[in-house]
Length: 59
Image: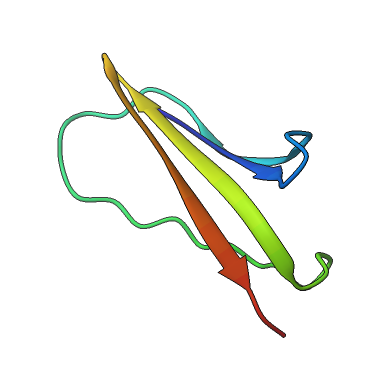
C-alpha cells in the first residue's frame, strides 16, 4: 500500500505510507505542521486499487 501527498501543482510533498499490509483496517497519523494551508491531492494505491482525492488543509 502506498499513500502519497502532492501539492496542487503535482509535486510530491510526502510519502505517508509505503509498505505491504495484510487486508484489514489501518490508521495513518499525518502531522501537517510543516505544510502551509492550501489544496493538496492524496493518492492511495493498493493491489490494483487506486484512488485520488482532493484535500483542503486549513490552519
